Length: 448
Image (cartoon, rainbow, N blue to C red; front, side):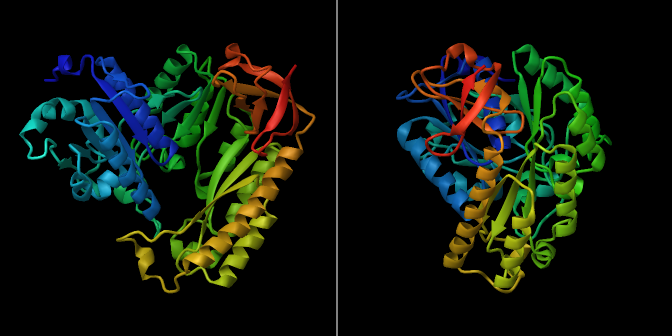
């Protein structure tokens, strides 16, 4: 039995690292606690509860998680500190040992956050340093729960969690160990959440998950059927798919999105390497030919589509010849932007058995080459639309600051402060796109 009175009047602080899925889940945690009478601490206020939602995709991510926990503890003396997320699942004992931490919840346990808080509330006074240092997590094979999440936090867009976990076990990746096997709720339940977001005024929903295209493992349904069902939800004017594995992008899905009412011409596709040799070492489920075919098909059916691509640099086995293949392959692709990140060795992964390690200086050099290539592709894509008209969903901006939003095909747009208005927030408005803004991250616009 949960004693809700213990939560009344409390203040909470939240910190999220990592992916959009984590941000969505943190926002849901905040909404749940708010329903129990816990408000979010304002700037400069000390929180009674601190929650850190962690990432563990790289060694750098682990380090940032530890730093974030230390900052939370220092800034909120006496607070009850909870840590969850991927780092918490993979290293629960180490995280629970950090000074000031009370409760560490793994992937299966975080869905029962309130119950754990209720059970532990007030017990920290019995610990030697005033903190519990307790951790709860199960092994990967025993992760079964699915924590629903459809929230927007302080953003305009909603983030709908449609899937969790991954069955791919790529040689470099710890995410399947942190998130468990692929699982999902029903289409019916997700449609109900989308309807709720629309009723609350949400105009755009981003579909999030770990391996979204694998949707249906738990329910015998298919991702394309989910897309069709969500497209029929009245009130939601835009959907975006956060990321899709190339081998799970069917022609049926591409064709449906091209003709759909609300799914935007915007794809994010992880490539990781443009060398077939490296893709095999990674145990990826496709080769460069399939990837190129998917990009070609998308651009044939949606010529204006924005295509973002993930690329890993300096993985085990990536010789200079393999990197040269990657560079040439990506240069040949009609894509819009690259997300470039250096390979980070993760304990327990099969990649550690692959010979030939790339040194850090070489990783930086290769990253710089791909980032420069990305910048050229990005500017080329944006430049095509200078002088054209577009519909933009604007997001709230601080008073006196420029307002930003995105076109259907994910071009970031900037309205200068002198013409931005608070009433533009969460409104789709027609604009004329102008030149690049001061830092070349958006196109300036005027309202039509």
